[in-house]
Image (cartoon, rainbow, N blue to C red; front, side, top):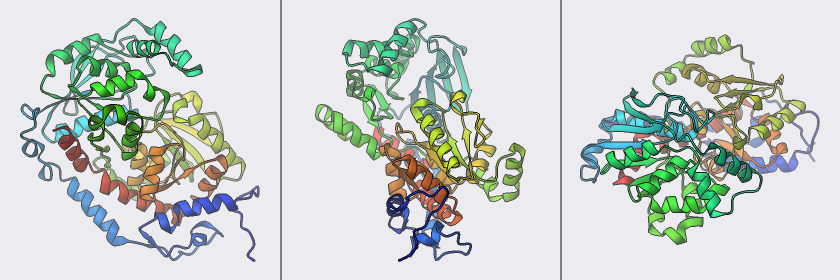
Length: 486
């Protein structure tokens, strides 16, 4: 009988954990790896290359596909393809979202990316947003000037927020957090007194007739108010999560009043059908799944191929030699406190990598701990340089409707660790073979230790990169959006 192995100190019983993780990420989950022996990947400190063979033909196919997709208008001429769509002449598309241009949350980043990609393809794109800078500013105070500006080819129109109702909302929000809002009148009051703009709604009612109007995300009062006020005219990019607000009557009424819904994943659509399918029927079932386009910004691929430039960028920041990354908003709703506690356990049990936080949010959630560091917002070149050299991206959020951060990590060839309690990110990992969904702190610690193996990281990262390129190039996503809206 072979001697049981351990992969870190102090010694813990890893047999059950490793058996499940083996089934999750071994050869059954990695189509680009043939005849992979699990023990050769990360057990025993083996220095030589194991018998791992990447399917280079498959990888080259993904590269060719991405290259063709980036050719832009040559591969997709939306005005010609959809010339008979009712809103195609003039080619006006309008996005409505509470915050734009000063905030990088998931829904806001998606709105900005869609708007800019459509503008690059020749569409006239407007964004209607508020004078509130970001969700961390008061929702009832105008911190940006009203008016119109041009941002990356997109016309951005800012409107004053409603300045009353903050006290009512805060009271309802406190109750929502502690005991929930089951009364329909309270749910409606919560939506009415959330971030809203009567001026924006009035403008949209008067100036968007015949245009494709897309609003997101569903949780914000502005979106619900707009869809209800312009019943049958607004498409909702819902960004649904399995959370209490999804089941409110206000959410059901809003979705029913939409012209169409755009889903980011099949799992999100399945969630909606599970709860609203009987009431909405074909209106829901025939709504398309479009995804979100994910491609590396211009010049980033060349940067990442230049090891000397990457080394120089990382040296400027004084980063540790081994680290994991959290990319996104630091927020309780993103499970950052759980991530912090789990990572402390990883360090206490012998982990030798640190955890770097990139992005905005509540800085106080990152403790003054020797193994953790908050870098905040960074320029794109530094962000991708850091991500590309990481041992992995960690995202334990249970409320994700897509997760751009995961796709960015995979494009950099980096594996991911997610929560098994998030259906969306777990499904991405299962379909791609680019990461693992963990169910407990023990599994979390064990998986981070296994990712200290370079061979395993390369195999998982390659699988994730192929998945992202094949499914979420911008041309394919824009094509699905426009055809779904026609």
